[in-house]
Image (cartoon, rainbow, N blue to C red; front, side, top):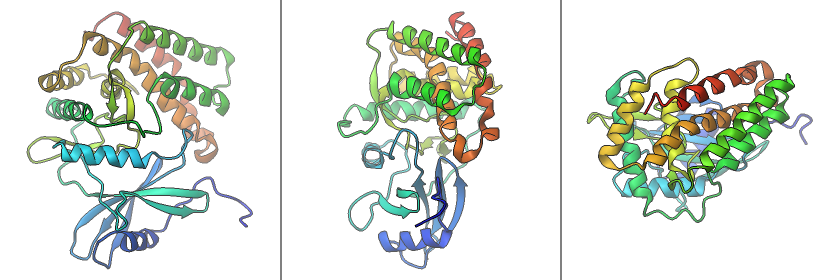
Amino acid sequence: MLNFPPLYSTARCDAIARLVENNYPIEAPVSCQMLERGLNDVYRVTGQNAERYIFRMSQHRARGPADVRSETAFLTHLAQSGVPVAAPIEARDGRFFVETDAPEGPRPGVLFQALDGREPDTAGLDDARAHGKTLAMLHNAAESFSAEEARYRLDLDYLLWQPLARIGQSGLVEDPDVFKEFERLAEETSNAIKAFGELTWTYCHGDCHGFNARIDDAGEAVLFDFDDSGPGYLAYDLSVFLWANVSFGRSSTRRWTAFIEAYRAVRPIKADDLEAALHFVIVRHFWLMGEYASRADEWGRNTIRWVAREAEFLKAWKASQLSGRLL
């Protein structure tokens, strides 16, 4: 028995290499390098013939277990529908994920073919258009995908109210007046979204912020990182790209305009969904703050104390979006 049970352990690269060798039809020996440690652990895996893969091991999260069954089913459907995505690779047992036994509990892993292409230009308009086109293709394909088995729904409870509760539980916001401001903003945003009535519901990528892609030789955005996907508001899935261009000191609404124009060239957007996306920028920020707040004991409070300062951004965005400048 461990005297100090871990919140989060990190697997050795040689252990990941053995895991891949034992579970996937890849010719050994397999080599492995760690690329990223955080919300998930991500490794580059190389087979004997220099073929490249990405192995992602899901981390425990406040929302609950990773929904890899629905995620990989959706990715497989998208790939079969011609949407440019990083599709999962089938293991020897026919599943698209494996279970690993970590000290803190079971963690699922998924192997993907490594993508060619370059990283997106986060300032250029062409790559913004590429993201808009691919996301529209994704939503078109989602119309023929069944979301009945999805573990999580990207609704206001999941995206707004649960994150607000995590912020409160974390103790990061020490000033009660600031937390009341968070509560007020959440309430007003929720009411504004509900006032639209029936907004479009679809299967969402959930994290299409402009970085989770590679741009291929044809200029297409090939999307990856679907572990936040699920059935949810179309307006939310659109808003994530806008949020990424206006939060944390950024201000690039021209990229949002290019993104939406390219999306509309493939798939129409109802006026209410587009207007609601402005409100969902606030929802997205609450979701991110809640994700970080839930890791206060894991990452340390100094790493995430920025959360307590974000009321100013939310208030400023609320004022600007009510002015209608983006539309």
